Image (cartoon, rainbow, N blue to C red; front, side, top):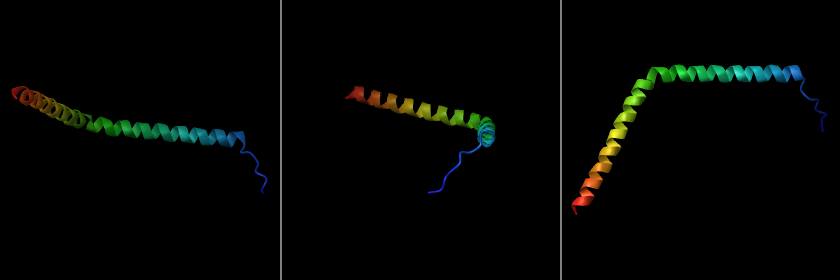
Length: 66
């Protein structure tokens, strides 16, 4: 069983800083991509919402006729 020495504190701090920086860059890229497509996403969401409301109204209307 090898005797493992703990990782030095500056090395752990440096790795944590790199992980945080990588997370910030990933979030920034995700927001940039979302900013390009948010109009299309809203349009598709509105179409889906109108279709769902139409289906509910149609089912309610036909349900009352019988």
